[in-house]
Image (cartoon, rainbow, N blue to C red; front, top):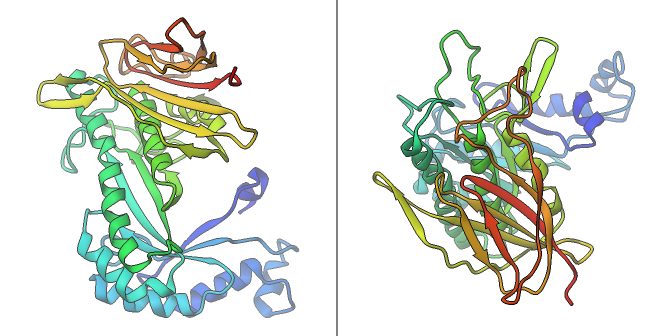
Length: 371
């Protein structure tokens, strides 16, 4: 809670619906947020005078699995009970993480009026849960399989959204993709869930951002798992040393999209194949910033071939590019700048603005004002 306050962020807590009674969850919130003279507020004042601010409360987490192995019908009854005693917070229902449409249907039908948001968990890996794959040292086939897995999040968002639309046609309830990112095998001797972070992970992040942009009518929160030292982290530490990962730089590249309004972008792109995997060469997102500028995000998925994007626009583009000479390039304490953004600019020619992207790259550019 102190870190959240320092960052100027909002707190999103998940209550333990698997074994903690509703009264305990209500008491925890009172302890943290009460501003009166109650017993719990006075206990908090032993270490913190001012109440904390908690905006989002998860009613359980992964209730279909490690949060209780519940049937949807049972979970919905429990959710309704807990949510009844949560006031002045955004009530977030534990949703789907296994591609289970029937679970989404049950929860929306039985608990829709008792929730303000519904969660979706989606993890990307080149293999499966028994052998997820390596974070580095992979080949082009593993590259392609991983990116195809990452792009699969769009189909899952669309499927969940269709069910939500049926029960919530006004789209009052937000879809929170509150766990997403890559998940690889933990190397021998490494701490649990630790993994290196490569250029491939930066592309996973960029492709995910573009998907979220295309679905902002329903997707209103998206939280990568996780921030530091675990899974697709933005920061890795080694004793007193800290390294910014390629995923960190992907987040940094996309900062112009913060607060922007998505624009419809129509893309015609060739496809490429690596072994049994076929992918589009390019993926794009466009948006208008609050001050009226147009920003473009471009991802070249092909690890071998450059991409040429003809826009037809009579504007210049200025921004940054993230790429590397190896598809598993990554930053370490010894080489912290192996994968970092570089300037990326283009001027319009007689046929308009054409952007040339190197293989396996991400570019985010802002267009100059219209002539």
